Image 1 (cartoon, helix red, strand yellow):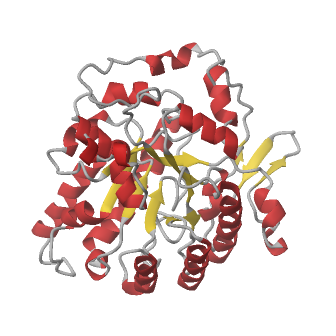
Image 2: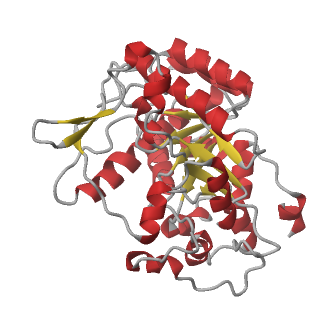
Length: 402
């Protein structure tokens, strides 16, 4: 990456106010570098992964590209509207990002050069595994990812931590796959933000219902971390035309991640299963204080309708059980201390995505975390993630060594 010219559109990524007054830094050449966990990285799966591995009865249903009579290529996926394939011409770093992450050795070098000690690895193309109203088909796709990711990323200690994908629309399938991946050695699950793909339907099961208690009991017993990644649950590309790229990212990709948090914090799930821990992934953190206030306001003002009555306010369940990941979110960081969330936020470089900070993570951290103390930066850059994902922290990077 160092020998690639930085194209003009990415020069802003090099801007930094410096690190004067910092006891430690995120710079890779700092002998006192923070322990850094990227809580959201992505695979670069082979395009034919599911075609080669899935049960043959599903071959005509896997996401595919077809050419119409006019020679135009279209991407088809059961849960998405057909999407025209546009050939993009990337330059400089953007080109590198579009190709990176396929080879485990290369991605380890990339992340080590960015200061990363541990990466949590999510699907990339595989985010479409949940894009179907058929939970059995979704579960079959998830099993393909789980087998491949385990083969691809284990054997590197805790430097690479792949997540196991679970389709939750069918409870029996979900329990069977969670049992299987736990025996394989997975420690982290990725659940869709909404169990049944598509628009809201009151007849669909959701995470607030006791229907899922057997699954929560299994996850708690196995001591697994749950994550909810953006763009799962319903089509994140619902808008088109003017402003569509921004509208889809903010409204249809990030915003639905709020739903599983409210479902868990307001329903009594976290009272019945006190050992559960969960994280929202790639949705940012600025919304978390607002959501906590909104949940508490509804709980108090709508007391006549609220069921069940909880032992604590909904916001307290997030503080005790929840985490949220982000790349650059200065507004969220400025609110973290006042809302007592310094122990709940986790940073990520989102390798190799364009919206991430790789390969200039130290500059991004310096731009956005200058208002924090060394201890607060240490928590957000890695120590909170170590608690969430059950990671070992080297002795010289623990808080006691500051």
